[in-house]
Length: 114
Image (cartoon, rainbow, N blue to C red; front, top):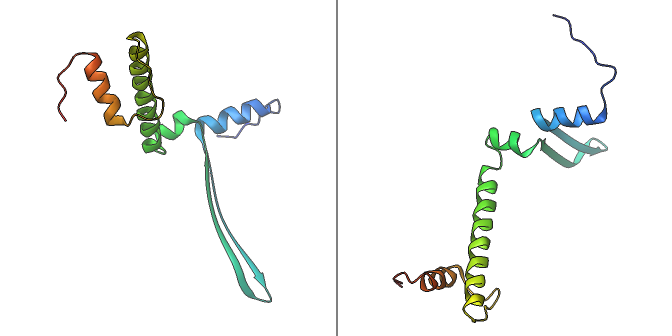
């Protein structure tokens, strides 16, 4: 099996491959002066597309947290729209998550337990 080389590969092809497969850089750098180590740096970097990183479990917690935040923001916006429709003026950034959940239940006429 012989490796082949595509001489017409572009920067876009390279970027596409890096995002699809991923790239890991692991480097150790030690700065010496007069034979004495002064500074040591351990660098680990991972570059990949979000789909690739989630496929391998990298940033799984971050992705779940971002989706949860977006869901809460959509719910908050829905509560504010309902309050506006009822003629009530919503106070932005003053309702806690628990308060907005209670307000949503009140507006939907569900039983509220505190």
